[in-house]
Length: 153
Image (tube, rainbow, N blue to C red; front, side):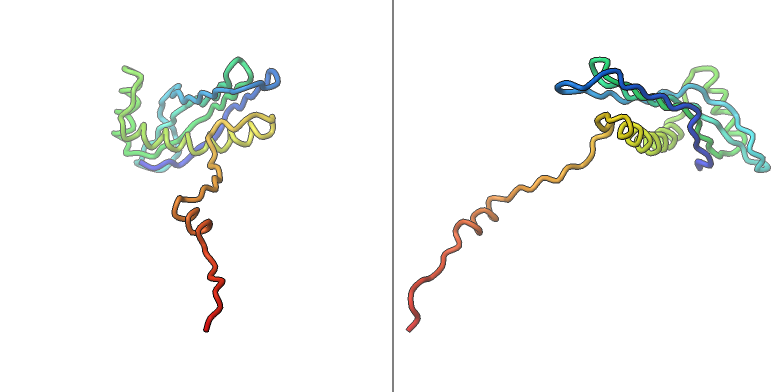
């Protein structure tokens, strides 16, 4: 299964007040709907997965909501089975869920980061930090360097 389309249908962000102290951020993805998509590629089928990605900043400080669709190319029979299973049980198979959810996270984390920056919010995604720490060996090498002050004969 290959992802052939992705787009946002709604972006909503709100900063309600000034941040004070530690802020907890909870991110969540919800699959809202799975349906057949008509993309005109002959015998192949396609599935449209609608999603909602949210970032809620603790203590009612701020919130982000991104809604959109992912279009996945699949065999026509498999696409019909996936849609039928969704209609019956609101569940999709693990392989499709992994592909779709990973793609949603990739795209939404980037968009949420940009929106948070524009609103002056803390990043909803943990970013890498630079941390300079010397190992004990490096500290010893620096602090125990001795200079031989004796005269050579």
